[in-house]
Length: 600
Ligand SMILES: Nc1ncnc2c1ncn2[C@@H]1O[C@H](COP(=O)(O)OP(=O)(O)OP(=O)(O)O)[C@@H](O)[C@H]1O
Ligand SMILES: [Mg+2]
Image 1 (cartoon, rainbow, N blue to C red):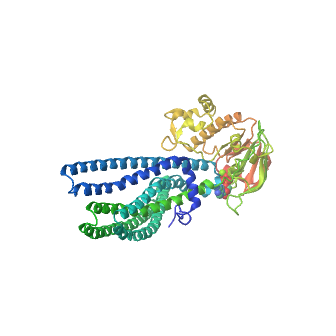
Image 2 (tube, protein in one colour):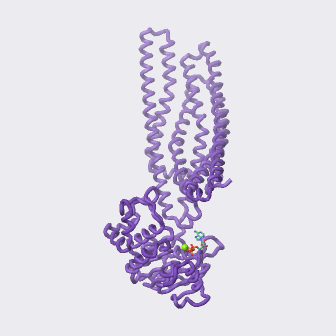
Image 3 (tube, helix red, strand yellow):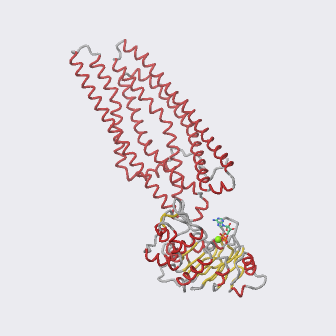
């Protein structure tokens, strides 16, 4: 069965992993006062819960069956007991309410912190990391895994303390009421514990299976919905339906197994608690008849026994929540510990103004081991020149740009900007100096204006001026809300060409020192392209620009043309120099002519 990008890594974590607990507890530290308060509330909750059977015992023995007092006294005494009973119920309610509120608050706050830390960390990670980690998996980290931990904080840690206090309290009270009967009852404790641990083990595996299956189902759904047009286009509905049914059935099957398990476990503990109660009625009832146990004590004993079995019943569920939370915590910490392979220099070199000369020296690079993508590239881009980079599909042009922007670092060689190694420049600064228009334009779900400005703080007037100069006003005016039209998913969809125009406006807003166009005009019509090129030539006069293009009209205008093939630079020179017979360039030109883009 396929995994759809999702796997639960590693063996299940041991609940007793001290190292992991220590790390989890560092997140709790800021809330230690509140946690102490929640623990204090545990005392109140347990105290109030356990006082109720005692009050019942008091009411029965001192007033209901007590023939020594007058009827009036017995009635008023019973009334007082009832008031006490009511007060303790109120206290129980208040204490439980405050405890749940406090725990939820702590749990949610911790999750908020972790979520923030995780997202900030993700923002800083390098491209290689994202290449090897599918989106679905990362989203699961930020949602499911954090939710799992949240459950542990709110419904397990402190409530386990509640349960523990309650069990100890009940045992003490039982022995206090009647040691002999209590000794008989304690025989049930090890049996109940063995059954609980046994079921917890079984349940753990099943919970795990359910979670994995659900994650697979989710990944598949996400994939199917994201690619619905491809799916319909290639008539894959039937096979998708089949896969989905299989996944969904698998989920149903696993859930049913879990239900079967709990269907056995719950009645079993219920059965045990009933046997215990039958024993008390038989043995304790006899003691009442022989006057060795009062009726009140008898009733209290029965109530305590009921209270005793309840936490045991929930223990196996809580155990599996802790299990899954530990696994989630580990995955979250693993992600937090992943280091960015693109190192930010400790003391970045400061430069007032860049001239814009770029130099690649013996640069070799591969994404995956043993498949070289760039092979010993040496290249000089003089300041202020326009260089065109051409080459067949997959020859490594975009990769070259990726290295320049330090999305990846080369395995061999180095890249300098004005004789400074780009690794010694502040990463953010480097990426502001170099403006890139990519093959794929990423659109945010926001207004057109916000999409152009991004974080630059460019004013509306500047944007309007840029639009005017690039001839984009025509296209903006067609949109219903002009610059304020919502675009992207859920809003106005843009055509590929319109997206590329938008990318130009973005870069012009930033006015970078160096401009890189990666097939940026492929989808723009010739007329718009001409207007654009003028605007760009105007804005970037005297600045270094690197243009990756297929269109010869664009390439010809460059000061220098570089031809790449299979990760190597094979030719370099001006259009006329390169247009010899049998050159790579001549072949590319010939192909382009056939495609109907004649040379001017
Ligand atoms: N993230 C990646 N992981 C692994 N291999 C990659 C990755 N990106 C690109 N490659 C591989 O590197 C080689 C060069 O890709 P690159 O994108 O640089 O080509 P290109 O010259 O820009 O091609 P095109 O003209 O089609 O845009 C290709 O063989 C491609 O399969
Ligand atoms: Mg490319």
